[in-house]
Length: 267
Image 1 (cartoon, one colour):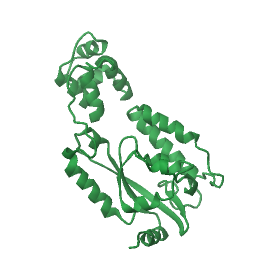
Image 2 (cartoon, rainbow, N blue to C red):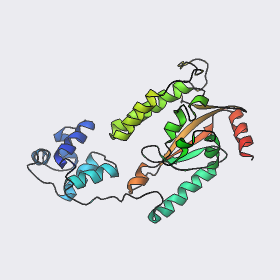
Image 3 (tube, helix red, strand yellow):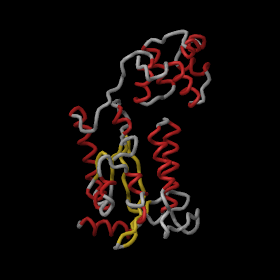
């Protein structure tokens, strides 16, 4: 067992409470007696590997957390955890690159669980031009880049709205699977100075997107780009990295943006 990890009992209690499940409900879900589950949580009984996996399914834990519980119980991880450039992920990597390339001339990015850039298409690279070199040195955190005062922050037309959206998204992600790196990123983003020219975040109003989606607005010499984003994940991934990989694709929110992106890309 990894001595840096708590035993499986405390971890089970934490996840059960996060899922708002009673011992009885979880026990019924995984077909085990409540008494035995109580013994596992208190450390009076050691669960079999099969029971740990059933508990993970009952708690709907993603592969990373599933591995953590298995290791805490003294078993080997069930899911591989490889880097994006691992030869074993070649077919998945090709699929990601095809999705990104097909989205040109509009930006699309593949990121890991901490929002570090794994890959991006040509349009995304164009929009990152002109930021501080340190922000585009690996690992590139795309949320930091979008709000940092030496990144895209001064060029984000709806800075306050976008920042609020990013912070809320990170907080939801942290609530679902607590992660110190995400908490630190939230604190960092909140500490950024708001650009002097940033307009107030007015909810509602005449914006046709109000109440529908939060756009990403980027000011350029050619005009304002307004995007809506969609998120794509690998629905059947069993590898840890692939289960956490997110493809964020940005679509023009208006005809002017579509035309500007065609001009910027030279298509």
